[in-house]
Image: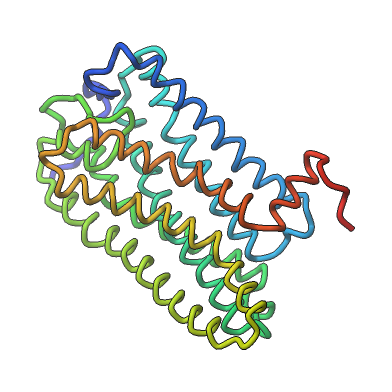
Amino acid sequence: MPIMELNTSATPFLLTGFVGLEKAHHWISIPLSVVYISILLGNGILLFLIRVDHNLHEPMYYFLALLATTDLGMTLVTMPTVLCVMWINHREVSHGICFLQAYFIHSLSMIESGILLAMAYDRFIAIRNPLRYTSIITNIQVLKIGVGVFMRGFVLILPPILPLYWFSYCRSHVLSHAFCLHQDVIKLACADITFNRLYPVVVVFSMVLMDCLIIFCSYILILQTVMSIASEEERSKALNTCVSHICCILVFYVTVFGLTFIHRFGKNVPHLVHIIMSYIYFLFPPFMNPIIYSIKTKQIRGSILQLFSLSPPRT
């Protein structure tokens, strides 16, 4: 049986910015940089508040910390190559770096879906079984769920990424984005890519779709429970604890399915639309999640005001 050798001496891939708008890359980089810095600050402040404010030392906010960590990871993995292309037109990327970037991008996408599912489970228990909430959703349970979600994401993405290291790339080495995606790379491979085409559709997409369906079903049950509450004030209070999470779910899954729809059925759509949708997918959820929780969650809003000395310290 022949031994596969690691393909390390191949021609590097070339990343692509906004085709046809190369002269405007410096101008395009300005709003991208502003969004990048906003994501780092927003999610960084969120993590800092959850760490230092004892009022936020609850399972709901621990899950939020996992979400903010994932958003930071996604941005830190994606944006450096984007800004290098925009700022200094540095387009070359080695195979190893490219595959590693693709691995983390796809892993973190699946992890974010899993965290949103875990947060739905947390809200489900809090509303359906409030008396047992503290005994079911313990810190240890949050840790176990978090480890499980991260392991699922990192392990399930390995099978389609590892073969990329041994494929030969004899076609054009120009990628269609300023970052590496699995589906973009395999188009350039001169090898049997049947597994790499089928696996993401059958396993990865089905897992994300399953997460979405479970979240949807959990909220139907949550809504049934809330509607059975006699007091309108208590009903409103219960729903308010879910508003932030629902907004984050919509932001994430609408962009996921929007990007998927464009890739699958938008063959006649201009390439610029594909590029813009990919940036919306990678930047919009990490940008919006801290804003949503800062506006919609009273405890987070209070911590932010206290951090900037806009309200007296809480006792």
